[in-house]
Image (cartoon, rainbow, N blue to C red; front, side, top):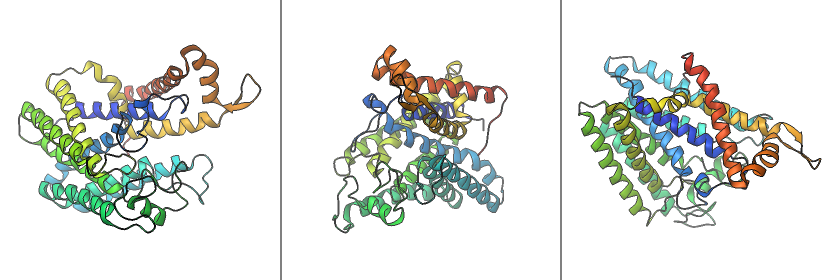
Length: 368
C-alpha cells in the first residue's frame, strides 16, 4: 500500500495552522477565528487539535496493519507503542517546564501529553481487536464521558453543569493534577485527564478511517464514503450540541463527533485532489511540515519561549521580550495592531518552514 500523500499534506497543513494560532505577535490582538472560542462553540482554531488526533489515528493503521498481517510479534509492537508514548509525553514536559523546570508547579498535561495518551490507548485498542472492537470503544468512551459529566454529582457543584471549573472533568483535574495545571486556569486543565476520554474517540475515528482508506473499495467510493460519513457525524454532533454543548476546553462528546466528521470531510478533499486527481505541486510546503510534524511543533514551542526570554530595550527605556519588541516597534506601526500580530505569526511559520525545508531536502525525517 503506497504512502498517502494526502495524509502527509493534511498533517502538514494542520501543524502549520497550529503554529499560526499559537504564535501571534500579541495575544491582545488576535482575530476571532485565530483564537479559541471563549467557552461553548468553536472557531477555526478549535478545529486544529482534533484534526491532528484524527490524523494520528489514521497513521496508526498505516503503521501497524502490515506488521500485524505479516504475523509480527505483538510484544514488539507494544514495546514500540510504549516507547513512542513515553518520548512524546516527555517532550510535552520538556516544553511545559522550559527553561526553569520548577517541578513543584510544572504543568503535567498539555498538547503532546494528550497526543501521547491518545496514541497509546488507540494503538492498544487497534492491536487487541478488529474494526467492530475499535468502533465499540469509540462509542463507549463518548458515552462514559457524557454520563459522568451529566449525572455525577460533583461536590459543591452538582450534576450536569458544563461551566468553567464547575464540571466533572474539572473535578477530576482538581483531585489528580492539583498544583500542576495550566497557569491560566489553575483550577482545571484544557488538556485534563478525564476530557482525554472523548479525545481518544477522536483518535479512534481516525483509526476507523484508516481501515476505510486501506480497503479494496475504489478511490471514488472511498471519497464518497468519507464525505457521507463525515457529514453524518457533523449532523449528529450539531444535534447533540442541543443537550451537550460543543466545547473544545472540556472536549465534549458532541465536539469529538462534530470535529471527527469535519476531519473526514477535509480529508476527503485532500484525498480526492491529491491522491486521485494527482494535483501535488501545491503540497510541497505542507509535506515539509507534515513529514517532521512533532519535530517542528516542539521546536516552534521552544522557540516561542526563547523569543520571549530574550530581553531588549524598548524605545521608552523599559525592558521587554524580543517578540513584544518586534511587534510594538516594527510590525504594529507598519501593519496596524491586528494585522501586525498576524504578520508575526506568518513570519514565524515561514521561519520554521525554511528550517524544516533543510531537513526535507536532505530526506531527514525524524521518527519519534
